Image (cartoon, rainbow over all chains, first blue to last red; front, side):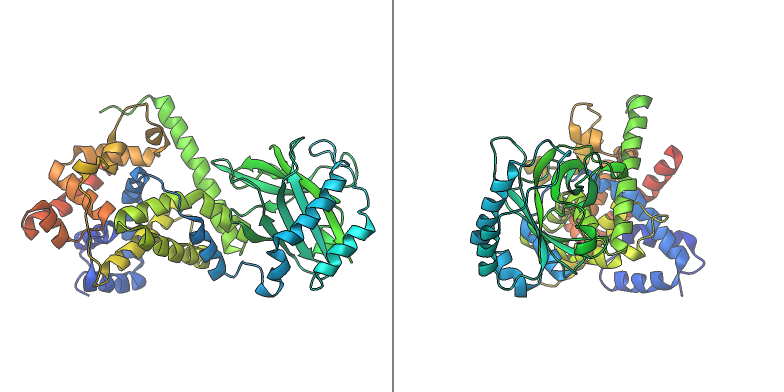
Length: 253
Length: 205
């Protein structure tokens, strides 16, 4: 190859490649050459590291939400369409809101929650009629944590044997800048610390991977809560944030 | 050109290091197919990368498509990201810029340049500013400040050629047309500018 043993020329081409002025056929040839020459790759990486900070001066611009939705669809993270009928139905969740409202009185304090009261049977039946396709599962409806605010912020659903928790933002506002929402399981026993179930993805509907199947991962948590944490989640697994939503995690089977 | 107090520089460096570590951890989690981590990564980086793509492509719809491609690629290639070789933002920015360059290579794409003098939107000027007031300047990393100082030392023509190539994805030919100079002259500006930039950054390190 004509460029070998010419370090100056190599470095010049690496610089122009990283800057972007090496184009067309020359760029493609250079990429082929890079694939087989580790020293050349290192030269390019060094130039990319030198020039990349230029990008910091470009003003940030939030992409529309549809970009993330498209990314999610392409990596296969959106819930399966077969069950999406009731999952997407607002009327369905309104019923749940009524159940949850009835129980919210039992939720006292922020993270020092106690076991919820048993949900009344007639209401559950009504829900069952509307959702014959629902498998044995856990369902949680989280409402705003404010005293006079009972908006339904967030719902979560996990089939009993699945390790995927489907989550859906209802009226949960966008995260404060540079923060994440984190979902917690609140143990029944008083004094036991909440356990993180994961950081909420920023999109409207998504899934959270549980450590094990739902009937293992969720069985000890009669209630769930969402807190505001530093970007990427609470440090050391301990919640430091403010509770924005909380609600019962109910078992149906 | 002054560089601010040493204390301020050190704290900026710490913030950079924290952010770097967090992004590295998120990328490592993405490599383990951790979707929530990927969502956090998107949340933390998409506005910056979308800004870069919009600037380079000049059209939001194209930038949206490129951004979507890039995040799918980041998800698929997270396992190949090697933290020892490049900083997370460098790695992701490079993916976006490369994809934009591919896009600009399509034969039917015509680049419409905004005139920086009219829009007052010149990223370099923002970055090179040593005014302690603007938040974006404080948020810029220590690396960016070092680079900005070295860019400021270049001849204006070299600086402009490099900035137009980096931010707007112009080829040598397009640079020559835009700067109304012979092709050879522009090529020399870019080459010498890059050489001097490297010399300056190595001397500063």
